[in-house]
Amino acid sequence: MKRKLILMAVAILTAVATFAGGKTQVIAHRGYWVAEGSAQNSRHSLAGALALGIYGSEIDIWMTTDGKLFVNHDKTFKGVTLMNSTSKQCKTLKLDNGESMPQLKDMLKILKKSKNASRLIIEIKPHENKELDQRVARETMRLVRKRHLESKVDYISFSLEVCKELARLDPKANVAYLNGEKTPAELNAMGINGIDYHLGVIRSHPEWVNEAHALGMEVNVWTVDGDKDMEFYRDLGVDYITTNQPVKCIEICNK
Image (cartoon, rainbow, N blue to C red; front, top):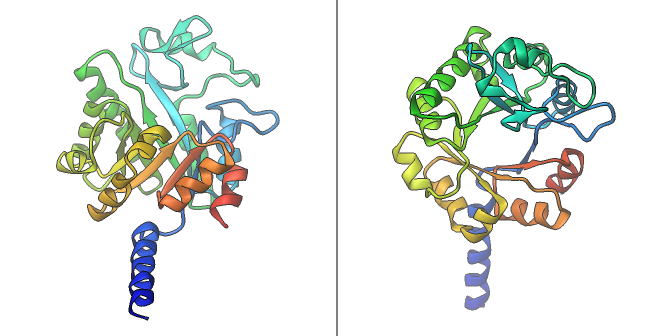
């Protein structure tokens, strides 16, 4: 009987530790781009992701030489390196679905019109140096504040300088680091309140999930597309799963 009670107590404590952050939620990686007529980081993909009512939709941004923020994952798109080009050059670029390459302001306009609570997760790409990283962080937050969307935007970056600058500008903002080599405690000491790590990093350091939660931080894992992987990270208790298959992930996270 005593052994049974001990086992029951262990099971309860494990469940509390695992699910303290609530149900795992879904983030669409570069929007809901697998839908017909869509493309990665397009207006269509963002609108489709927001319509799903999931936690949020992720986009990637680069700053042009004249200080405009364009949305694209790769540094170079159809022969044009975005951060070494002007906004006039970038405006001519067409996505695979025929849309012109969007600017951050276009995506914020779509977010502003959305009637649900879904958020925009802005990944700020690392630029050439610390000064540029800080500049793009400031300009990104300026545009978000201009449209009064602070409560509907999260920020992520592989650049530690970007993350630190965002946390300095707004200590209440949700800012998560992507690179994977820092512990939750190290980031927490810098004012960064989230880890957003590759699925392989979290699988190698599953203890970081509870460590982050104990510090009041949130945990996202990317890019998770397989059913078994979705189930694994859901059961591990991560707060968010970033995926190219948001509809399937919704079903699995709701189980």
